[in-house]
Length: 273
Image (cartoon, rainbow, N blue to C red):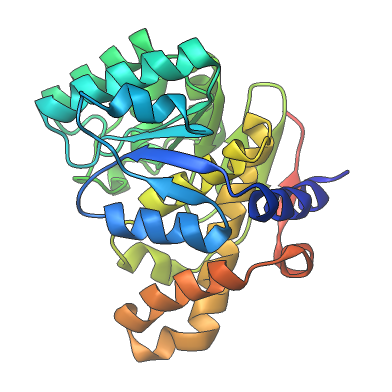
């Protein structure tokens, strides 16, 4: 099967299994992450207290760690949950939001990647450039214009190699690689960048596809493509109304996404590696 067929089939599997996805994520986007997880057909749970984080992870299909609103309390919860996931063979996704922006974020990414084995990392060009050890300069939690000279394929490949996992670099053209295979995704709409948390939501979607039994590379590509397709559909439906209506239309589009739509709209460029 090509990637379009794999993504379409995996979407159906998400809806069939409704996997439980444990998100330790940031409080700016936690509600949206829960809603897109539900919309795609999975079941979200958000448990970030260190006294239960590991227990919740043990009954989940995927653990998603997002450092968007970082604090010392949740760092410990992330480590405990990640160690439990590794112990139980549960896949873990990392969203290194704002990596490179502060010493705390940098230290946390370093500590998380030292103690936890990740299946997928998802970030923008600045974040994955930092993880890859390339020159990077973040703009808060957004990709910095100063990093546009970095090669997205190189950043994704080197991040994947450093962590031994699939890397999903999202931008105008998304790049997904596991070090062996590589695919570019040409879906999405510029309006997605005007809504807070679409990157976090994309990571949550990757977690859902991973929880349905997808291999890390296919799950990463499927989750990223799902958000891109939803952005296109949302703009058709509500883009002229403004960003608030567009935001809701993205979740609506995800809730209606099916195999037929994926096969008609997904624009994967399978380039090898």
